[in-house]
Image (cartoon, rainbow, N blue to C red; front, top):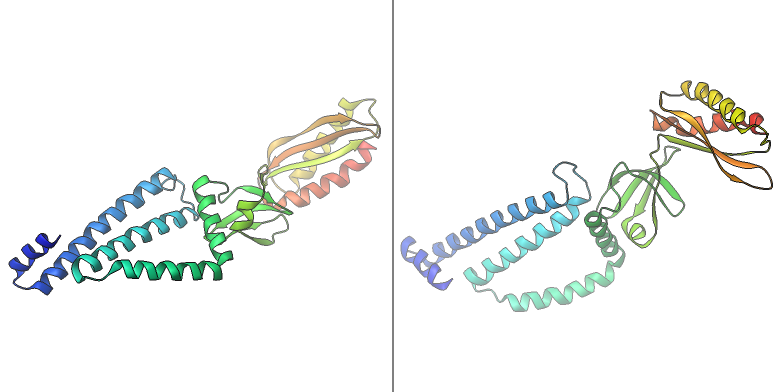
Length: 253
C-alpha cells in the first residue's frame, strides 16, 4: 500500500493529493464489493422475485459491515489513524450500548433470524401466542399483523423468535366446527348444511371453493364435524362464520 501511495504521489506531485486518490480508489472498490455482495444476498434470499421487507435487515447489516471495513482501511492506510485504539474504544462502547439496548438488540437479532430462516413473510396467516392474523409487514424491530376484526397487532421480533409460530390456513378459508347430536342420517345432515352454507356465503362474498362437511370424531355427546369453504374476500370471513354458525344450529340439533 505504501508503494502504491508513493507511486500515486509521484504522478500527482503531492503526497496529500496522492492519499486522497488512494482513498477514492479504495472506496470505489468497496462500493463494487458491497454492490455485488448485496445482489448475491438478495438472490439467495429470494428477494429479487419476492421482495420482503425483512430481507433488508440482513442486507443493510452486511452493507454496513463492508463499508465500515472500507473506511477503516482508508483511515489506516491513507491517514495513519491508529485503528487498534479506535476498535478497542468501540468495543468498550459497544458493550455499554448492548447493556442499555438489550431489547432493541434482541429484536434486531430476531429480525435477522426471521429474515434468514423465512419464518414469516407478508401474506402469511399466523398465530403467535394469543395473537393471530395476516402478516402485513416485518421490520427490523417488529412484525405487524391484522386480525379478523381489522385490528393491527404489533409483535416484537424477539417474541416471534422465542415462541412457537403457528401457520394457519389462508384467511379466506372458513372453518366452522359443530356437534351433531342426531347421527341417524349424517348424509342428509351434511347435504342440508352444505346447501344452507352455500346460500349464506353468497350473500357476503364469492365462493372460491364450494362448502363441504367433514365428520371427524364420535363422542358421547354426538358427532363432531366441521364446515369448510373458501371465499374470495378475507374481510368477510368472520361475518360468514358467524352467519353459518347461526344457520346450522337448528340442523345439527
